[in-house]
Image (cartoon, rainbow, N blue to C red):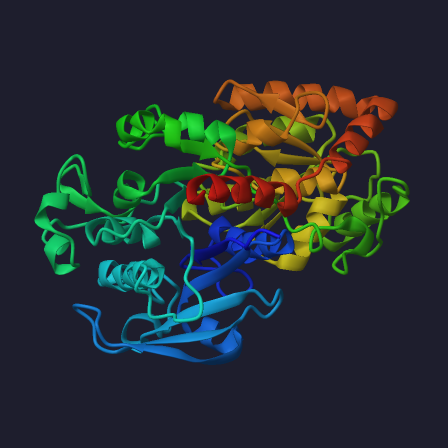
Length: 477
């Protein structure tokens, strides 16, 4: 039997320990899926309070005293609480044990020392990956870095001449880790790295560009997004570099947690159901209408939207067409939080249409499951979407998604088969898809075929894990 690949998975967040977005879902699920297919994947995380409290069997692995610019750093080791995946934790209280979130304080302001905090994470990742790794019993064959917070690791490895291959995954190119140029030398990078062919980004230091430039391979979270970021505007100023690396750039679609999002066994739902027995979905709809004070009308097409309430997510387009949906007999349910003006727009819409529109500003995990199960249609008209998860949850729950044909939405929804895809980036484009969806909803046999087509799609992490394992073997072998 071939020796198991050893992969160090460096990330700044991982569900269920700490989460601000989709990165945590990937970091929590993909290593477990890789281990299921025989890859020895281990996590590296910062030692935030929730991480220290949540990792099982935590103990000291190493004391690191040779990291320039930092005092003694403890490296802890333990296991993820849900999957048992081995995890290393960078224990440095000065940088990581704070009352706010992973990147921002309690008032929502970025920590002023974020560059130092995540340079430390990157340095430890690089150190553990080198041939002279202080981990005597385990050295990775490949370092897999995620988003800007670990972007300096491939640069550090490059400049010490370490030949261990690296993969840099971009989860959202809009977040790049931009810092003043004087930090280049302070963070241990040679001045020669501050160049167009290096870490320089329009006069500043970019952690993400460092990873993109120096990594052996770049991946992102859907095939279409991998193409989109090679061009403006979604290239966010890096399109030239990304296009030049097209032969070492690929898109591997994220999966979803099919155990957590599973209508036959979802404990959040008032009634379970499946593709073979769909009766419970009607009960879920009725229960959702009752819980949110919507009119008890099983014939009303119920549209759900669970999203950050931001411009990027196309909520403004939804607000422009919402009156039309209500006029056609539809109902809408919103769950999310975000920009104050968008939140107010959603509240105002609900105020104009009592019994027809419900808005819950905030987030509730159980309610998100009940909205997916109780809705007939799901709105996801993002202006751009690297991957997206809710369109996959929706299909699994027999809820037909309406999506803008970008990024992972385009890759996971087949127009008129498992959902409705529109191309024109506008409220008018969304409305044309809504009209098509309402017509299909009225044709019950056709609608049931669409529901079943979505419910039989395979969006499991096993598919993604096999693609990553093949990439790892290509780079290591």
